[in-house]
Length: 266
Ligand code: PGA
Image (tube, rainbow, N blue to C red):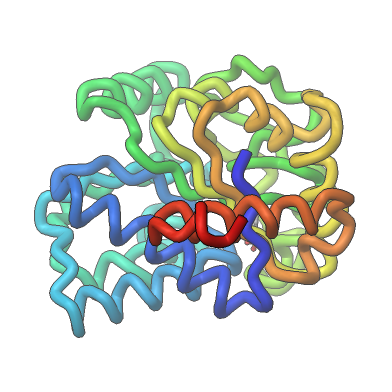
């Protein structure tokens, strides 16, 4: 796992947006896996800027979001579809038909979840999956105890997640109890993962994810089994990482390698 420690959330956002933008330029028909939450907001703003100022072209990009609350209509102000429209899709030249967010009002969830998995497969799989992380170590809504082989399905949210997300709804009572979410197994099939975290409250989840054992109690730790994960955190979220200085050395060596100056530095 590559670990990049940036000074603050701005740095995380810019670095993360560069990974996405590089892929979109290299493969204009790429499939992006997208996440909601506070963490990727700055990255989305930077992608919008790159689209406006540098003509980053999303016209053939396909997207799949990780999750959606059960019971919320797409037009609900707190639905993840609304979040994506407001913060990203409405500001890009992306084809609405190429953007997929799970349907929180599906009539038959079993059938719908299988169809979501099939749609991802039919598009050739996710090239780059953007991920946030919960304070309980979840990725998407794969709460502690989720099978590490899980596929898209319904999950019951933990009280911790409901508390964390109440700030968007006004009160805990208004937060839906269920969500439809890609599984850990679904996420592990993407070609590359980009895990983002910011803030002191994420420090323990990040340490457990990067340096702890692989366990269903911290579903993000399953990313240790993936061959291509880039974790981008700010100083606060990376505070408890024991091998921070090593991760920095790795990044410095990578920079030298890319510039062809590695030998001279030795
Ligand atoms: P956040 O949410 O980005 O709003 O902190 C992350 C998550 O719960 O996955």
